[in-house]
Image 1 (cartoon, rainbow, N blue to C red):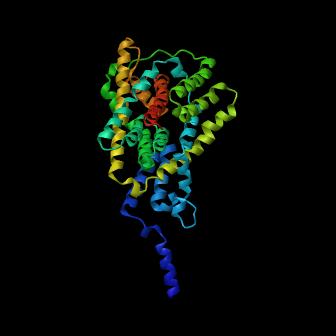
Image 2 (image 1 turned 90 degrees about the vertical axis):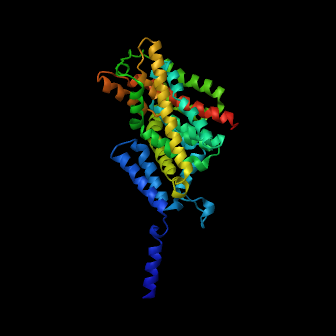
Image 3 (image 1 turned 180 degrees about the vertical axis):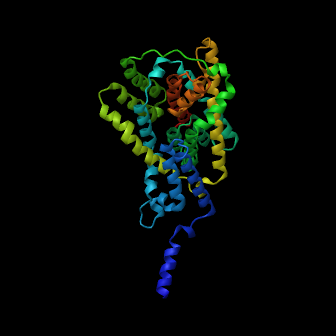
Length: 382
């Protein structure tokens, strides 16, 4: 009888119920909320589902993220090895290649003024940088946190790793991807507050056709210029432009399809689950995480506002030919931010079509965020 009792007792104590803290249960609830938002509300489900599930797993079974040296058998947890590819900048760079293969840079080439709006939206990054320093973070931590303002998860992970801020990588990545998912909620109130109904109704002229030669030369020229100025951006900008060159060259369709489909989705699974797995209760439930989430929201809101304000300036200078709403797409959440510009414009006038015009600043924002990351790396000598 004692054998049965001891066996049942051992089995019972092997369950997670006896090992979890209150914090773990809080994070499990948060993971379930994220899953609800992803599945029911469809807020970037490709990102939120793996992130939320990684969050769920690590708070039920912390050893899934354990390093080899912390395990008696010398073998680390499954998601630990996924996470190493984040630290080594492998997954963020591959994500950029997939984004390049999926994205048409034609609107940016057709309207180079879009670069101004993409650059303007990066103001939120620098505003958050100085605010983070004011709140007590050191320079490198402040730089890693501020990139959240670009609504660019891969760049946030990339910069945090390069600046040695792996302790903050989890909160930074989760905040960045959360704000990417919440673009349709966060941006419209800011856009409407800064524009009049007349401005939102402005219809823009159709973009000029872009030749195949221009589309082929663009990624090559951007790579040469940007990487010569900021060589540290090569992993991100280089992979982004390589993916786009696959797309536009027309001679490597298999590579284009692989980069934009199979490889992209595999990387999203690995990156999403490993990012979610950094949110153990011990690492996530602290004051620094709250500060990071607040700073990320401030940065994102400031970037959106700056893009719209510069859009209004360009509207005035162009004699009312530019709809200020496209400025909000200067954050690098591709293509969600461009879709939001279209949606808000269509609410003012159902016949207004801003999507392609907004894709210009949106693509410029991706490049701009990578350049901002490279600038910080140059400042800190990385």
